[in-house]
Amino acid sequence: MNRYALLVMLAAHALASLAESARVEYRALNGLCDPKRWSPSECAASTSPLGAGEHRAVRMHIPVDFTAGEKQYPIGWPRMYLNLLPEEQNWHDYDRFEFQLFTETSRTNLPRRPLAFHLYDVQGQRKLITLDPVATGAWKTVALSISDLGLSGNVARLGVNINESDYADKDVIDFHFGGFRLVRAADAQVTELKAVAPALFCDSRVLPVEVVVEGPPEKLRAGLPFRLRCGDRVALSQALPATRGRQTLYLSLSEISLAAGAYTLEVNPGEPPLKKEIPVLIVPSPYRSADTRVPN
Picture 1 (cartoon, rainbow, N blue to C red):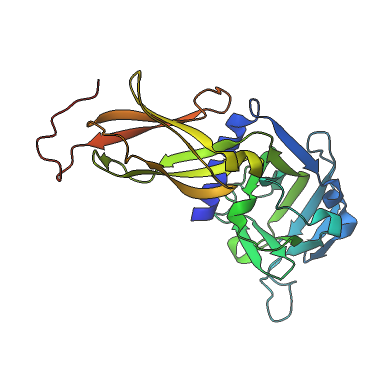
Picture 2 (picture 1 turned 30 degrees about the vertical axis):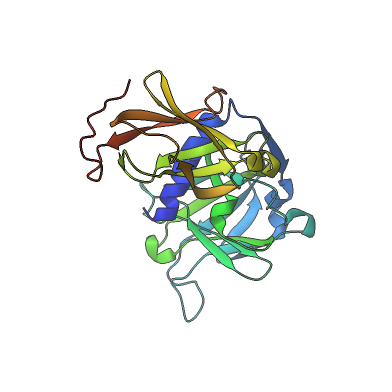
């Protein structure tokens, strides 16, 4: 599994756990389910007989044929593309792009790289994402963090394709896509929280943490509340401004003196639906001799 596919899977898991508790706003992109807007090559686009929730879906039908592709590349790349309308292109006001995927196949198992998803910005910059793993016989939510896409301009074009070389001749695959939508959080929240290092010296000046952040920019600028505690004792409370997306934040430890021990770092500690926490291990410093204190 490549790194981005792993991030997609972890993000989808984290977002699913927040779905029932965090306040979110949606913008449906129902026009993306119109098969007439897709331009297929070596495959066919049609209205899906399946539905993605309350919305219709588009089907990509691919009969793998090692002899019927382009003359120079008989084993090719069945694909289809869609150009976004101007009113569909501004994604930067949102946190993530989601859609539903249902897969049917004549195979027993899908290959390791079953499907690639493309996004292009207005400058032609491309982001290629391998959708792995892809489930068969059930709808699967694909959630892409817009900040992770790294596209500088508005999103202008979408595409999907397979590499026929990953399949066997005469395989048949149907991918059903639906429920396209843009999503943004109504509250400042962290969907991923992890320590940058497995342990920290007790005389460290900062505590770095990697986060993925969602929410209105003005609320993020006001600061995310963090709390570092050891048992019931609060060692540090601090608010850090953030921006949307993946980043590393640094809690200042310069005004406190930590004892070695097991701590817990919390974000949004006073809001249970948004709260996340991770363990932090503070170890004795080789530069602080005679540090024998223990946490209270």
